[in-house]
Length: 113
Length: 109
Image: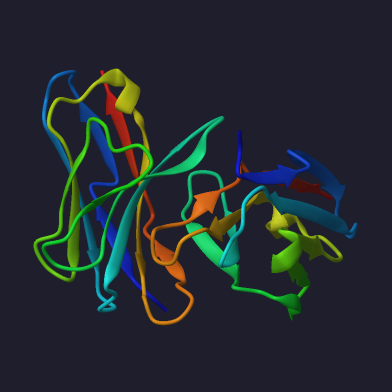
């Protein structure tokens, strides 16, 4: 079974501060994704990556940056955190061969005060 | 509007009852997946790229991609089935999934 690990599990940040959410996968998947989940909106795609050095904008990229320094690691960066970015963030990895199946991490609960 | 529409929004079952969850897609899709999520938990893949009818234990998925619909049938529900069931579609290959808002299932003894 695919293993996707997110850190931290919980984070409290101040408005205007910088926040980095980390994701590590041990399955050598090419593709990785960042989603946020909010009541009434469901899961929405923020950024994704096809491999080391690649980042692509998803459906709601504003206010977020992403970094993929290696096959295993994919970070989501909030340079200037705002209360509207309070949410649960999920990372996922996918094997791009054939129809892609996604494996999700346990999520990071972020509160921006 | 929502590209992935799930119904019902919520469902309350007595243990042992059956249930059917619906998922409809407003655009063309390459594939779809069903996920299960406990409150505060991660997403667990239940059915991946189903076509036609597939069964896994007490869960049965029936998907017709060309008609842009899928259903998830829970038979003989158990308390441990409680949680949210999410369907998601892949519109373009390897560009992420688009999710529905989910069906929250509560099973009581």
